[in-house]
Length: 192
Image (cartoon, rainbow, N blue to C red; front, side):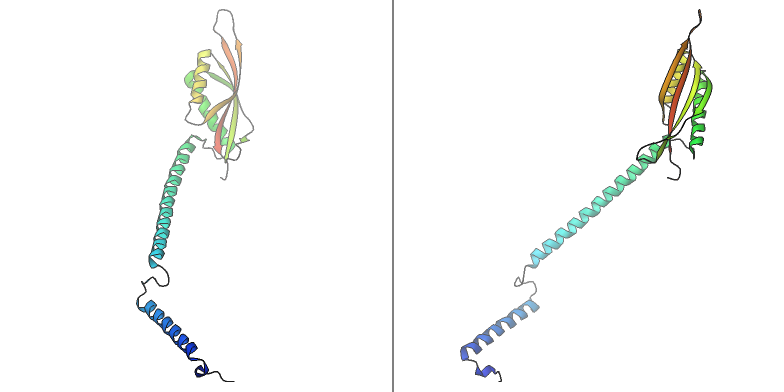
């Protein structure tokens, strides 16, 4: 069975020709006038693209602000870490604390009798270690006050963890104080 266009009724053929002519006219219009809004608004598409570009530029500005903040925080951390002990191992950090304490005791004219290095303690969730040192000191009240003040205001981060004081008073003389003080400093962990 052959299918022929001429066998179709006149109305159907006319409808097919009119629809074909209309589609051809649409195709020609779309080809030669692409800015016409026949198949969608190019203005809306441009607005969408412009908003995307603005969003990307905003993200880039935020990235620049984040980078600047990161740089500022890195400098702040570096400045703060200047107060850490510089020894590579806890033993060397303890020697650094010992030297600081000897200097403080000499300027305050106190007398350090013994010095012991205690077990180090990790600082939770941080790459730092507390290095405690215990020392025994003979001094007057004024000397002890000066030594405590200088320990607490040292450029290195030192803190007094524990202190025991015994007062020995002889008749007619000033009070002599025997102090057992535990001082801790902070150092960066090895290999971090």
